[in-house]
Structure formats: structure tokens, C-alpha cells
Length: 283
Image 1 (cartoon, rainbow, N blue to C red):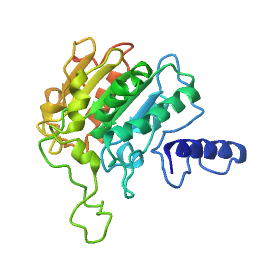
Image 2: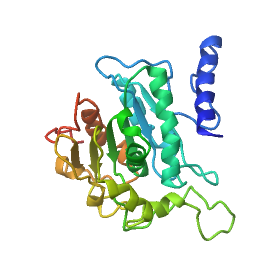
Image 3: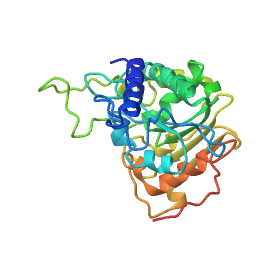
């Protein structure tokens, strides 16, 4: 199913639910939304003028990746949206990253059209925190994004190996390999990353917040996640500088309570990235 068809399907289900009062607001059989996301009737408030789009990481879907972040932001008063993208061989977020960015573009347009907002905030995990940079830098998305918040993003690639989790099996029974173009794109020094970063780490307009953990075992070294740019545009945060006892790893970062606070601080800025002096409550 194409992304545009998915968007139409979700919106149609929501409309039908409103008419019949019997179906849940989100009942798409293919793209199950996380709690609080994809209410296409939501209108941003003056306090939170930019709708938030949650972008999952490699091998992930929105329902799993954002099961705690989505309701947290919804309860904080944001219009929250999320998508799946880059499906190959039945596995999400494994297509070439540039192709996935081309799927993000119409989803952003759909959110802007539905909410009447001028821009969106993007919150992405891993590949989802890096891929929007291609959308902003090469597909004209910069003028539509207020801020990109990357949680353990693969901005400069990894020197490690991106492997599927145990619950993701190779598409062909008995296959020794796994078809994942996005994995190759995220290796340090890949042709894709060379192109992505050839125009610099940032583009004019959006703000950038990066949230990283020293215990990241996937995007290594963790410092490769950071972006270069002036303080008025870029904030790089290491979780352990705020909460030394927080031992969170790569996959769990989107559900970490400390990370949720850091994301909320970033999204709460009227202009610019997260406040580097903000101190979350350590648990």
C-alpha cells in the first residue's frame, strides 16, 4: 500500500468512526497507530502551534517505537502524528533512506493540510532522526519544519553493524542475509551519508536537538550522532551528562522517561533547539 493510500485509509476510518460511533478512531489493519497519534481532527493550540510527527527507526513500526512517547506528548497538549515508511519484504524502515524521505514528504503535507499549521516538529529515533535531514536538505522540506529532534540518530553513520532484532526474520526462509538497504546507507562513510552531509550538518531554517546515550550499542561511537552548528540552531545532549545513572541503550531510548522530558523541553521552545541547561528529573 502506498503512503498516500495509507493516509487516505487512516483518515477514512476516522471519518467513518465519527459517523457511526462504533469503530475506534484508528483501525487501519496495516498501519496501527500508537496511542494518541493520528487524530486527523486535531487542531494545534496557541501554546503548541506545531503538530508533532513521530518517525520510527530501522526495523521498527510506529506502534512499537512510540508506544509511550505518543500518549505522553498527546497528554501534554500536542497534536501527534506518526507513520510507517520504507517497507521492503514486509519489514518497515529498511528501504533506501532517500526513498523513505520521499515517503515522509507527502505525510508532512497531509498533516499540514489537516491541521492548518504552517510547520511541523519532527521527532525521530535512530534512522528516523537522521532521514528527515535528507527531506529538509534535498526535498524542500526545510521550510515546513520548525525543529528536528533526533533520539540516538545515525547522523554520521555507525562503525558497528545494524542487524535485525530477534523478532525480525529474513524474508526468505533459510536465507543467511537480510535485505536492508537502509542498513548499508547508515554505515559510516556510505555514499548516502557522504551526500547527506556534503551540504553540512544543518540547513537554514529548522532547529536541531540531538539526544544521545553513552551506552548506545548500535550507532557507534555515540558522538557520531551529534550535529555541528551554532548554539542558536543546534543543541547536542548526552543523557548521562544530565542523569549519570541512566544506563539506557539504543533501542529503549524513545521510551526512557528522561528522554521524554528532554523531548518535551525541545518541543516547548518557541524558537531554537532545546535548552542545554535544562535538567530533567532523574529516575
